[in-house]
Image (cartoon, rainbow, N blue to C red):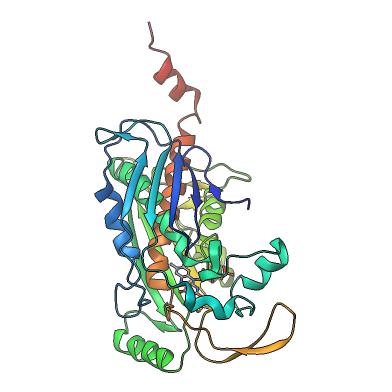
Length: 349
Ligand SMILES: Cc1cc2nc3c(=O)[nH]c(=O)nc-3n(C[C@H](O)[C@H](O)[C@H](O)COP(=O)(O)O)c2cc1C
């Protein structure tokens, strides 16, 4: 299966199925000399972990990361970093019902159409389990970005159409969804601070295009906005433009940040704002009509453990994909100006 790699310089390849012995990621292109230990990665995996929080799947996985290569005496060596997470709490029997029946909203039908063979246990590569690998790689990216003053904040914005700060209303909505064997969608936001101006390139590698591709590659993400996104379409230019000003020291500032920190595909030094729309979890116990592999009409009630909403765990994955992309663009950007190259290599005597 192609398409398991992402990034140009800081390049990740994820591997494994949700119900195989383990899943993992190989990171190629991480600079040498970065202090890295398993705990640096574990903290982020714990934030994404299933079974954490009231509305997560009951699948209580340990998600312990092991560093298999690329780190020596606590520092990265510049060689591929291989990270592995064992699958300890899988119950393949839960999935026998979807061996021959296609879950509406999931990848069962399309994977079968494409490959003619499919690891039906948990959705194989299309499982949310794959995202633990990206999250591990994102934690490594964030470790280096932390040294560079780049920070990430994620939060849920809306759950099932209700603003996430209305916690009681959201709780009631989620409890109702669980009672009815249903699921909800929602919106998450990621704000990235401390990103220098100048990342991204003006045409196909625009920073917003790169970030959108990164976030859109997460299962269940169906929409991505940068800055004010779709709301900008309803405004006049005079409302939507972010006026520049110079502060007392002559530094460039903007009075507003409707553009979400990116202009012409290049970061402008202000906060980067990304929002993602997550569709409702496709696997639901509520009865649905579907078809089987023989293309006969059937009804289906999906068993197994599934989150009633993906946003809470998905937003950590979103942060990880944003971190991988920002670091990749920072590494690429080091060659953007001749003066940078000269100041790095030109002093060798
Ligand atoms: C963190 C995370 C957890 C997920 N958990 C589930 C789940 O428990 N059950 C499910 O049906 N889908 C889950 N998904 C969503 C599926 O992976 C996704 O809907 C499926 O691969 C189909 O892809 P698409 O929605 O992008 O079309 C999860 C996604 C993420 C990011």
